Each structure stands twice: as C-alpha cells, then as structure tokens.
Image (tube, rainbow, N blue to C red; front, top):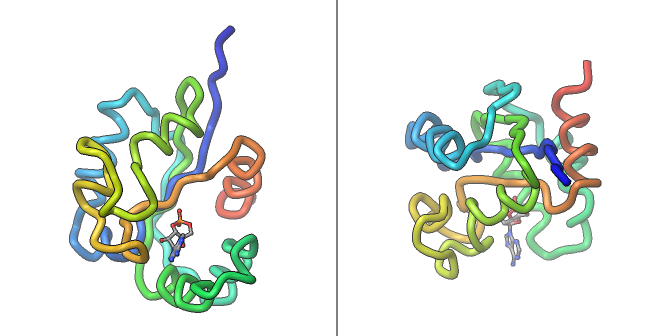
Length: 136
Ligand code: CMP
C-alpha cells in the first residue's frame, strides 16, 4: 500500500550561512522528495524553545534554542513515500561524525550542534512541526 506523507525539514543557521540552501534542496529532490512549501525565516529564541520543547530537560536545550534562533533558517514541507523515515535516512546520524557517506550531515555537518538540518522524527511529530511553521 502506498504511504505518501509529509515531513518537516529545517536547513539550520550553519548551512544557510554557508549558502548551502540550494545544494541541500537538490539532495532532497534527487532522492525523490517534492518541496511542497518552503520559506526562509528567522525565529525568536522563545519560538525555538516551543519548537524544541520535547528536549527541555536536556542539558543542551538552552544552547540548542539559542542556536536555532541565531540566524536565518529555511523551513520546508517535504513529501514522498514514507517521507519521515526517508528524510531521516538522507539526513544521517545526529552527530555528523557518525553519519554515513552520502548523507547530508556527513557532507555538510560541522558538529552535533551545527548539524545543518533538522527533520521530524515520527509521523505524529511531522504533523505537529508542519503546523508549527505553516499553519496560517
Ligand atoms: P535535531 O535533529 O535538530 O534535534 C535536536 C538537536 O539537538 C539535534 O538535532 C542536535 O543538533 C542537538 N544536540 C545537541 N547536543 C545533542 C546531544 N547530545 N544529543 C542529541 N542532540 C543534540
């Protein structure tokens, strides 16, 4: 049975700053993702805190939220068969040091914080994260 779904992707400040937006979008398109919607924005730290609320008890929460709001980001709705898992595969491991060849984080990630992209980790969170940025 087909399972076309949508997921949220963010090109993080480290990648936008290095002008990698188009290269990263090409990697998604080459893997068969459609970019249904996209926008370049900069968010407030308070919005990053809401977005990453699941991590609020983690020691890296404050730095993570400061970082996501530190510069422009590109938020995208990606669509494809099994988009959530396919996006996680294409992004690679959270820490670029552990990421496989051919993944976005292996190619462009700098560190576990500056790992160039975020992607929803489940179908349920994909809906919540898409609404977070694109609900009008
Ligand atoms: P992301 O997929 O955006 O989700 C949460 C982010 O926290 C993660 O990518 C990392 O960039 C960041 N992070 C920083 N330190 C850690 C850590 N020790 N474990 C997991 N994520 C971390």
